Image (cartoon, rainbow, N blue to C red; front, side, top):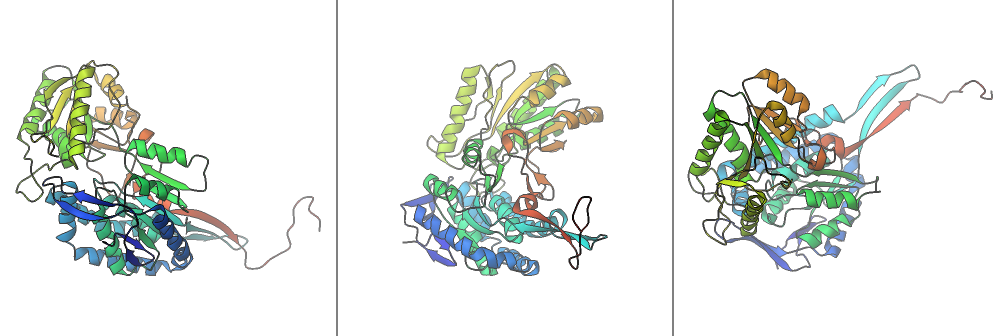
Amino acid sequence: MMSSLFINGTWKAGGGKAFQSIDPATGDVVWEGPEALASDVNDAFSAARAAFPKWARTPLDERISILRRYVQELDKLADVLPQTISREVGKVLWETMGELNAMKGKVELSITAYDERTGTQSSDTDFGRSELVHRPHGIMAVMGPFNFPGHLPNGHIIPALLAGNTIVFKPSELAPATGELLVKTLEKAGIPSGVVSLVQGGRDTGAALLDGDLNGILFTGSASTGTFIHKKFGGRPDVMVALEMGGNNPLISWDFGDVDAAADIAAQSAFLTTGQRCTCARRLIVPTGSLGDKLVDAVISRADRLRIGAWDEDDVFMGPLVSAHAANGAEAFQNKLEQCGGKVLKTLQNPEQGGAFVSAGVIDMTGVENVPDEELFGPFLQVYRVPDFETAIATANDTQFGLSAGLITENMTLWDEAHLSLRAGILNLNRPTAGASSALPFGGPGLSGNHRPSAYYAADYCAWPQASQIAPEPKRMSAKGFPR
């Protein structure tokens, strides 16, 4: 039986049933192994709990050295890791090569962020000195998503390890091979036994993880799962909960001169990574009239001409969705919006029924009431035509989410207003909504998270502050009414 788990420095088989990850482009099996039982997960937490005191006391320079060796080991996977991600989740190779680079870059960014946002500070006082240090929480459970199965869990794991926490990591059940590679790379870098454990599996393994002996849960994924986690740990202030849960992201195009440039930005915002980025634009808001019409037509023209194919084909912009199930869900969502009153301008369709490939779709939802405020993870764009910029802002903010938004304009007065009014943690001007920097915070209000932004701000949720007043020796104290 394949060794699918890594617990206390040892690879072992899980005690549960076997499951697989499937290449959505071909249907080939990429990875197969047994999932972790609750007892396996408990063993992982026990190992993490036992390893924590020593790891937390390991000098920061030593932890940094291990993580820098991790980058060196990632360099050796320049072909293997991107291809593994592409095969598991369908992303085209030029994107997964970028994902590897983001994983490597996360280490130095995290070192800088730890120093700037946490770390140690001290100052002299009239009684001695004051000191601020930061301490690790303990055992962090990390749950990874499928869309960036290397970069996003890596973005939790690296700052958590840097701060001195130990990790129990469950990758997405759709990307177990990528999760396994990540952990094997940390192992080769010299991470001590028990500091990082890997448990594989689906819903039952995830439930066991949330029931484990944890001090924090670091999650990236759907709003429904994130909301469940938030409720589960309600009344548990002892557990750090950091959630990133996606968005129903708006892109406003207003007072723009170059229709082609605006259409390029809008199409990339909506269709990059086959729409499987949580920052992808889901709603395009344009002025009523000829300018808005020209932009919508130009976006549809680009959607018609997008090159779609498998990860190893040349000049491919868009791969398949992660699974045939996801493709069926995308078509069902399109049908639901059409039944609500939407007018399909370009049909999202599955050319091979039962497969994971879909074409990009566009639907006009102008004037439709009670549109579902949901995030569809797919290449599907809703169009809203509005009479004025004030209505455009109101339409953009008409969502429970708040992750990403954008404005395409040549009018900086409109940008000033949008900057003040749009409720989004990531707000871009004349850039795709799907563009985000790891050197900045990543997250947003509403159902997009719980005010624990990641990326550069991950340092904030990986350590807690300890403030001290320090005198060199005890001295008699005096205060009004205090006995002498």
